[in-house]
Image (cartoon, rainbow, N blue to C red; front, top):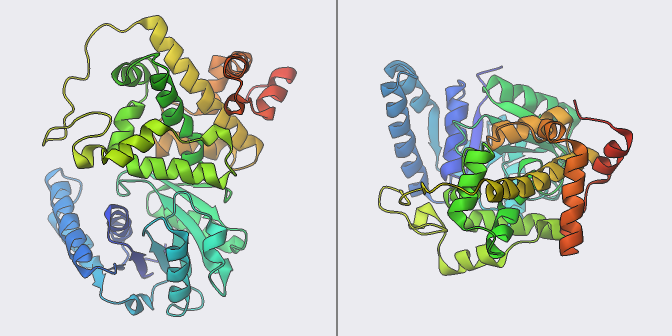
Length: 391
């Protein structure tokens, strides 16, 4: 890796500042730009505090931390990014705004500069279309918090130069990340495959099968997930999670598998966005605690029903992503374990559950509800017919 490469990051929010920190930790000089200068100042102050804590924990020496902080430089104008070899934008998820930014950037940077978008759900191909040289545009989707979570989805648009894919994949590895390459389809890997973790859990709640705490505890204590779906939505922010769900649904031409829920829409309308507002699916105190997590003995049969229903929906999404060649088997598994900390890869989980069992549960759900939401992937049907497994 050429550490003399200058990196630019646009957007000084949590994601942008995190990406800048990752680049600086890897040895690069990094210019951080935002249309609001005070946001850059706030981000630099926050990063300095984060680095000081890492020194206290023994992750870096004081000298290393000082060098990292010195490599992150505020950019007062977009033109300050003119010498960057790679520019990563992490701004609002608005296609019109992103396209204008990329068109403006192209007039400033060098002919060989790679322009990357950190979009989580918009089309990389559509963003690239704003450029005279769309082959220079690629998706580099980091996960929040960027300095901690290892996954980066590398997403070539239809026009992206092949060399940029391998170069960016190698660079992400050099930055200590776990890159996965995926097709430019709505939600990429993680935000596509993970939709049922939230959506099906909400449906279970809406039907009165179980309350939120029971669902969260079932997914953690029986399913082995690090966080329950309602806890996680509150952590992510219900506005963000709802926007991603709606964007994926609309981008798939309103496929019922990704249909958003009124429950989450009402949370957003009420301003109950989660931890950041002190109220979401749960109420939070000033320390971010939501009270007792629940200690009553769980109904084992009910909890197994909850986990099995959500799990087969997740597995079906992973199988369909493989069927439609969104990514390789290995990258789909890596994405879900490294990006959202699932206890195991969903395709491996499918083998352990038994593909006939997965298919049977999906067909029963489809029969009961009469909804295309539960349609099994053609690949799952074919593998059951042939007695195949993923591993």
